[in-house]
Length: 596
Ligand SMILES: Nc1ncnc2c1ncn2[C@@H]1O[C@H](COP(=O)(O)OP(=O)(O)OP(=O)(O)O)[C@@H](O)[C@H]1O
Image (cartoon, rainbow, N blue to C red; front, side):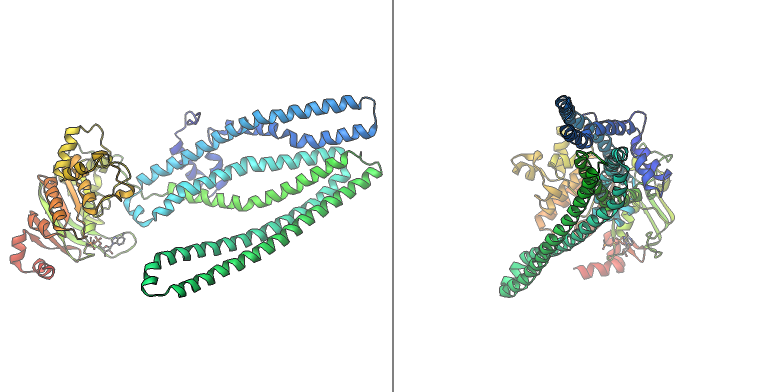
């Protein structure tokens, strides 16, 4: 395939620059997206012109042939023969030129489409985690797929459909002017009325169609709900009531459908009839002109055909308006992401060759962007290399927020978080995170094999290394019980595995990176004692000798931790070992008593 980047252009950066440069001018942006591809568009236009020739030439040749017949000239046979040959050649040319037209058009638009999607994908990878938390993933997905497609449609409409329409109209009018000024004026007067009438009827039908579609969508949602509710309905013996409720909805759809059928048939036939009446008026008008010898009889078919072309092209042009509006909306919607400034900046910051694992929170204050309320308030905490610190506290106390500061997803709004004495906000986070592993509360697996999920992002992992990690994460029994072992597909989001198994794969993923720092948000879901033991052993292997931050829920984790920090009101209210805090008989002691 010849789908390659235009020479000398860094497409992804250019797209962002283009959006910045032409902000607020979607049509310029649209043009800019095709930089480097204009020659392909030009070629597409040339081939389009050739391929489309028969449409314009056929009415002329038909008229000429009729005129030849009616004139009874001696060389009429010869003329008919030559004109037929010209027509056949033009028709035959349509096949190769159509191929060339599609090829050039597709190469230009598909490349821009892919480039735009790639620029969006890269931008999503750069945007801050806060941005992603605040933005619905469905909306972002729709921008990458649907909006880019709408932009592609818009380009095709703007550069080719409109060109097609314009050429059709211009050529029809030009030929008409060259042959008869009277018919040209007739066209000018009647076409707008005919086209507007057609658009009016088309729009009414489209509106009715939309209403019907919405009713259908609502019905389908209700059917889904009914099916999901069947066990509850059955348990309460409410089957008849449900059938009654559903049948009301089904009749409502049927009624809307009936009205739609009637209106469509009525408006469809009225629209058709009006158009035909205009055609008849045109026929009668040109017929009278032919009778008065103002035009040749054969030209009647030519004008009939051009009149029909012009009216349908003008109404198509009007129908394009909603698609164009939707496309412009999509150009802007993509810009919202490409121009978003909430990105992680690493350029020029200190790159870390290694991480020792000492952390220090100095008077850290933190509030989320969308609120002024401090979640962390003068938090002070020191964690030494190799220590495991368990963060405990009530729900909403700020434990996960602390983990986010350790990962560098968020930064202190006041105070400092130091990593090996270096302010984390001055560190190139990509270099820092190479030495960090995160085990989230809900293990995130992707559809692929267990092996892919464990080695995610790491190349050249030896089989011995992998086996070691599998053993340390307590996965040996699970892997051996599967016919395909490590190469078993885990299903979408690891759906074929249990929660405990997914968690151990997450732990193995962390282990294989051999990190110096571990960030662990323990799962809150209850596990049976065997599962809990397997995970605890795996965790012990993982955290050994590494600085570990744990949001702890399990008694065993809290006991094993080197230090426990009790978080309340945004700061650390108690700090010490399990025994020390129990002896203190303070907040931690109370929490433990309630849990017990
Ligand atoms: N993105 C956000 N925007 C605004 N407020 C947030 C955001 N994320 C968390 N918060 C708020 O910050 C506070 C601390 O949340 P955090 O998730 O750190 O608590 P937690 O101690 O981890 O709670 P849990 O144990 O329930 O997970 C809560 O009041 C929460 O509502």
